Length: 455
Image (cartoon, rainbow, N blue to C red; front, side):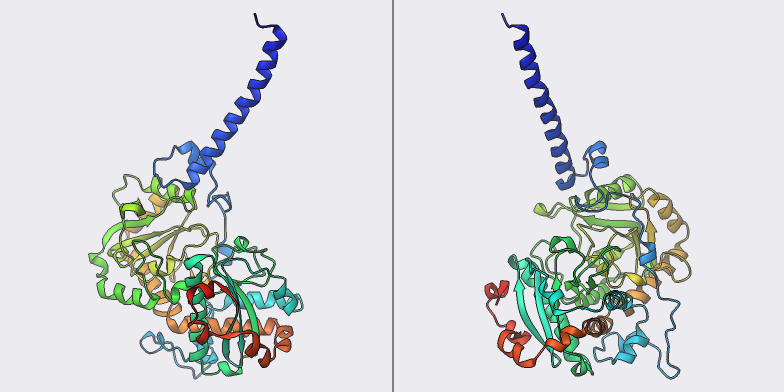
């Protein structure tokens, strides 16, 4: 017969086991909710998981409208005799000088000026500041000396990193090679990351070039993403190619507004920003205006090409692990972009306008609670919807996301960076880079494995 104190001892052993089991079940439920691509995860699990992929802001009401200011109030023609921007002649022109860049693309350079002001107030960026940045995987260090691009160091984890680093270097080299006055650029050195988020690689307090930032990450500098050069990632939709090639395919296949399907389209992987993406699916479920589905990559289920998105009048945009690089492709369509309130800022986001005569996208809440009402308003007023779609084309595809605008941005980034880092310019000697750096042209000829960890 079991003694009373023996029973109490067994009970005490059992209680912690129960708590451990409950905790383990809770942790597994969160992991499952964040990483599963199923669209029928129990709502209680979806309610518990963070808004993004674990590390993102948990608040669905995250506001960043104040940081996405449009520069439409700035004059398009700041000098009396400057000609007006014409996409037919100017969109592909990589040789625009600094004055033309400022005249043709007002508002494009807001973030580099913000970063320059931030660092100048801190007495500038020094070589010591750069040396304090540990080069993690997905980062590269480069320099511009006498107008030429040098690779100082690269750290890549696999082909994904290598391709992205090469694409960023290629874009910088193209901007330098085509610019009419890049030979006058001060010598400088910089470090960039191709990871999705700043805190993937380092503290947000370092002067690092990044693809996207949150509003409070003020020390970093925004650069255009690698897809403006080209992108191939080896999956079912891997053959994306250069951004301009995607635009050409879209122009070739796109149908007039009246022939587009009056529905909202979205395709994506649910385990990136799981809470938001499932919220989109729930808001659109069983709605006659919705063609919103998750992609099952292993069998290419529900996959449609970038250009086939343009068959629809409305295209949903949802952030991923941080920003989503697909926005620029969606903005190449003559369709209405429907996006939730954004948490991450890219270099061209200052030109997003959510209301008024210049409206070029439709903004909804991060939990998509107002999506049905916003969609019904668009469907009830197709003329207004078409105006928003046309504004998007005029603003982004025909102007601010063109090769000319991208090259102008890279050169302005280098100029503002050099203005904020005179200490770096003063420490650079040409002979040093002839010894320790490698010209970009030579770096391209290296074996891919040597590119991963250079030198």
